[in-house]
Image 1 (tube, rainbow, N blue to C red):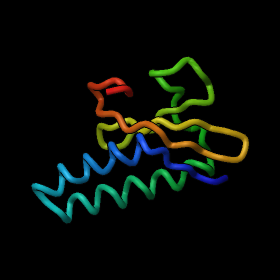
Image 2 (cartoon, rainbow, N blue to C red):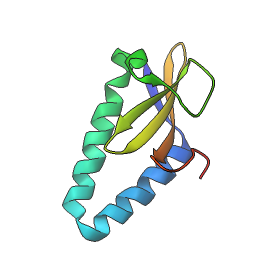
Image 3 (cartoon, helix red, strand yellow):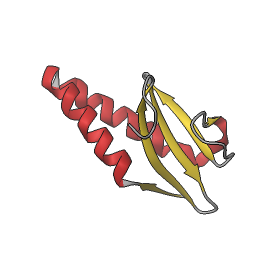
Image 4 (cartoon, helix red, strand yellow):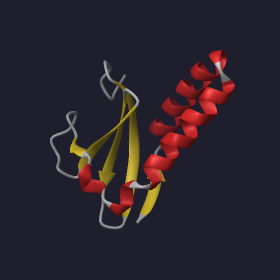
Length: 93
């Protein structure tokens, strides 16, 4: 399965990485590397992650990572990663 990163995800992730790097560039790199490593594991078992609380669709799942929710859609041959949500925000913030 191929992983596709949507612009919304990339923009929000970059914003968070920039914020973390203001305090600690090494922590920001570690956060990004760990997150992307976890995302790369999604295709092996995408349904182990919970059904999204933001959408009423079984194909949209939530992966929890260090207080953030990564929202992705399971398609027949791809995983679309489109949401990066802080726990208190909605996916459209």
